[in-house]
Image 1: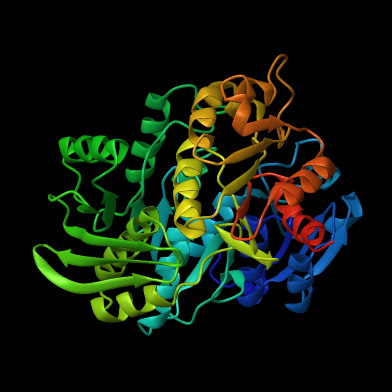
Image 2: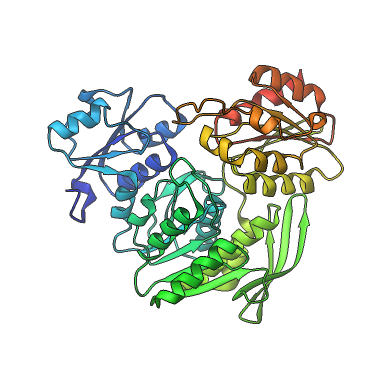
Length: 465
């Protein structure tokens, strides 16, 4: 079953190992909507799993050989080890096992699909494109790595033939998608657990672009050196795909100028090949978000949507979960949570925080994500965090990594001025300290891809008390 195209999902019985993850749950949601009999297991219950139960999925908490039952296809998350009892059971019974990306690629077959890739901004750009297309009268299917605030979900089976997916480069699996079109927001060194050099990252993006259909399109940010290098390589190879660019640079096909950033909004004039399309207004701030919106607008135009409808749709976009997400305001202090876990992302997030806070201070609680990333980028992290008025450094969130001897948040701490940060590995103590330090008008930012996001609610409660 894994090698053939599944035309009729209503006859499929699919079991997901690690069904609670953002990517896995999205695929399960779409397969259930297409009529598949869906089951799955995860270690912890969640509201995501409740959502899948409401679609008729059978959910098991904990992994066991018995969970597989009568499945004829098993889908696994990349985080699941080969020793998992459910995978062992599937192998012993000869049931095909698909990786998450390959399963998503199956769903994309026969659609006008767009894969959104890049080191930063993927989730926001994918969400923006989805909302803009919805406003343009299309009902696209989508699979995104976070919940879109506008729709309250991370995935949806649309009535139209358009499919928008977030394409994650972290393990190279995005080469499975074979989309009609792709967006690449930027290319930088990251995921250093898998890629040792920027050249290796460049290569995986080259491999990804090579999978775009011959009659397809590529949308690139001309302001980004990595994306620009990629464009030159693609043109040299004589690829048949059409390439269009966006950015602030005067050579961009879709160009932004007259940029104006406010605490809770951003606007700019947009021109396409020299013709003014109009004023783009966003309900979120940040220069990087204007660029993300440009990428979505350009891809929408490539799909044949109307420019005015797309621009109006982008104005309605209200954000995605963990992307500069306001957790609450207490006693004049705003608490915001953000997923930023790479120095470039932190720099952009702190720029937005500074605009948002205006005359107030920005107080940051940062949790580095992975030992390998901390080891490689310690001084860049320190530099990016210096834009915060005060930073509390939590200990590293390991994700699935083994500890690297001598690597801790102290590597970042050593590079920072002692007056504007403290190394504080205890989460309860950080909650108390930052709540005490904050005054009315300040902004508290919880930052990182780990469990630091759980602190927002606790900080608000501490401020109240």
